[in-house]
Length: 163
Image (tube, rainbow, N blue to C red; front, side, top):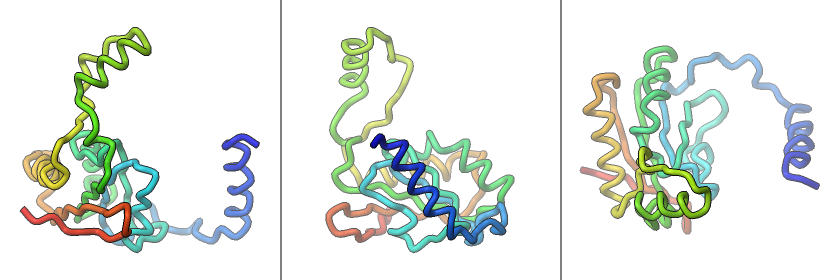
């Protein structure tokens, strides 16, 4: 059975008892979460969120510069007034450089990706602090509380990053 077939079967079970169709469009807790796309991190479970509570914006590394468009929409059109950033231990973004990935793309695909910054980082705590500053310095982002966390993939705990 393919993964897509598994998705379709799981969705039938999910939809059979679905009762969240009347949730309002804006998130109930007025928070946007920017998190890494790593499959070991489930932001909703880790942060105690349910459907309708928050916007969860995910990308490689949980980088806020890449999430900026979504954060602006979340604030300006849907009323979020707090932001949480969640990076995690054992992140793949710690394992490569732009130059390394660009060389791999050239070798594997014969394409030039020199125009793309893949946003890797060498220091996990600093990456969270940098991402907080990216949002705080942006004139497009409201002055709201922004909290950064590191999720431990081995224990499930979050640790607040203080700068």
